[in-house]
Image: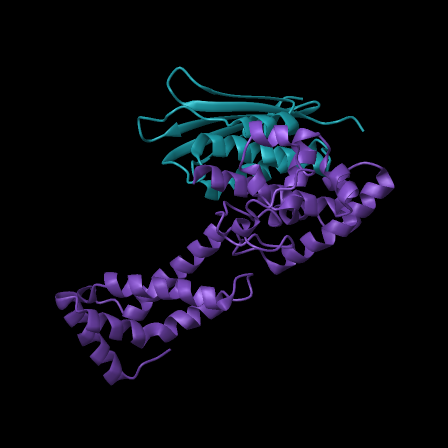
Length: 248
Length: 126
């Protein structure tokens, strides 16, 4: 997004004036003048699992911070300064949402393939496969398998108000109170952690099978008829969510 | 076999991935199954988060991975910049999770006030 020389000069003067007066009107005008930059940067983070509207919102917050903090006397172009601030805000958003910002596409694809490969090997071997066995089957190195496994674990601490990504639908908050006594027995839930009850039913069930009943991930996968990789992802996500809500 | 790998990282969750990938790489050398590798990963997350909290601290976490014949032992010690380190906390749920994913585990505060943990994950005989 480029301004002509005259407009640039005008904006620079507005920044100088705003730095002195902190006039709300100037502030609004400056934000308005650069909103295109926020939208442009938000679009560059699109297709990563977050709605564009939300990203524009986040980028706008970054823009407002940039306008408020910009010091024109330092001689830096506002667009340079603001780009840095806005991108920082967007990255933080993804971090807080628990999505990996930089999982290479090749790794995402390998991760998706792994689900099937692991399921097949599980069946053929009658046990959970080793990394070396998966690597041979997938025709890639051990390291790539490890990296692809890690790529599916990109969840960080998700707040209870964040949408729970994937197939369980709805945000965590909407699932609050949707208890299912058949999923986790009352005794455990009461003595252990009311936090568990806040998770979507399927995640509760997986936690229960893994940590209360001691089933392995592969055993859970076959009982629920989903892939081991999926169980792994859901477990990682559940634990990250529990950790986040425990700290709130 | 008694090989050792050490990793010192900032006490920041951003770096947890390194701790996990190191454990996974070593476990794969020991022919752990991917179920067991996932357990390791969960154990590392649980224990390191237990030391540094989900927002991290100013300081470092030193991890020592020891390869045993049938498993991996991981010991971690935190060194925080602020004096009041506080003692590491482990919820009942963490305890339960660690019981399920490790063969042995402990978390404690050392004499000098630094928190530390240790766990062992053995390979199942297949």
